[in-house]
Length: 302
Length: 302
Image (cartoon, rainbow over all chains, first blue to last red; front, side, top):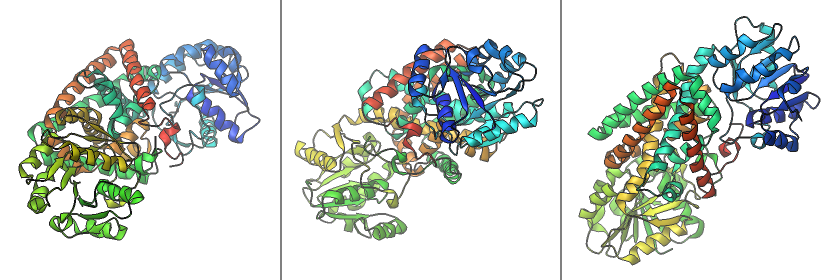
């Protein structure tokens, strides 16, 4: 563990899991943390996640590593509260799903002698709040770092080994590329899932209990995705606008082509398309990124 | 168990699971079955699923209940092979995801003295083939029956108690309504998932390994849905064209509105939409249709 004192800014699912994952192996590291909400601070205290402080300035005092775990739209203003009080040599990182805009909001506020290493652990569930955290959330999951050119390589390496210590695999890429990759693999899929669940909720000739009881595999997965934290996702779209719109445009184009095939009864086109996408799934299983257990590994009686 | 001899036409995931679920409790019921593919017949024999016959006529000989477990586009032609050889008093049912078109293809071929009770168990995984079957697939899942007016109530009740004996809950509805409900809860979500996976596979500025390694929760779920059997899904869309296009139209409308909100930076609209859909998820959990285990109940190290 390359840090003696870690400060968690925001106390939700991710920071709670970070605290629990640190504690698995490192009993002596000091962990402080805070949240804007008094309820969340109280819950974190009850759970014994870390030393809970009343404000960000107290939480970051003398910290070696400060992890910003707030929605991407709040990163800049929250950082501004305490940036000037950071000790020289401290490192700041974050867990935001968007990198270009977060870098743009943090860098102008960064004090001399403090380094910022933007990060994004690809892990989470649809649940929110400190009580949703668990210590194995990052095990075998990727954490992407998007280092800034002027940041010393040693600082990046320390953040890398911090995440590896939590069980994650670490990769580095350019921030713009990160935002495009995530638009495809996460952001647009979420928007689509939200949309489909909204459509179902709106239909007047189908009762809500029918939608709920007869939610087959496809839709059930969508509702899970669409249950994620609304503030976090609003901020993702507002802050990754360019890449999201680019991927949405491509999605609409493809969907229109498939819709036309349905209308015309072009079975060959549908069959070929569905065969090609099946291959992508096979490769994800091979890469160990998911399980092929029956019923998706869920308990069968739920 | 209201039948002494059950014939399975088609030997995929669903019929294998039916055979295994029958055997859990009913050791003496005769189960025969067949598949068009010699490989599938051999695999079913190896697995000891049932008495495997070389053709449909042999499989249905003297059967009390015949279950059509082939893609919906093949129901009519497969039924035509053996319809005339069915014994009087036999009942035919099916497991197709579409009901109006299946009824339209079966009814003109139905011999006097044989009843058809259309059915659809809402259960399955993204895997195919007899080796993917398991005996608890239908436990606590819904099976929808869409009875035809002229069918005697006693026949419907027997099919109902058959499915209940396999662990399922049974509900009845009109065939047209079924097709609309399923277009929302299953068919269109599948088409959307296929589309999103296709978009990712097409992007030239993102490598396939990036898509595969960094497939976060949203996309990973889509690839699972998009891994389902291509023949089955081609047939679903060709045979539930009206309802699918109706729901796709509504989906595109809603998505366009959200896309516009992203472009304009309308955070309030996004936040309200994402909050509303979260509620649908909460109700599905309350109805016991899914689990909220961390990491979606998947093994954490996979």
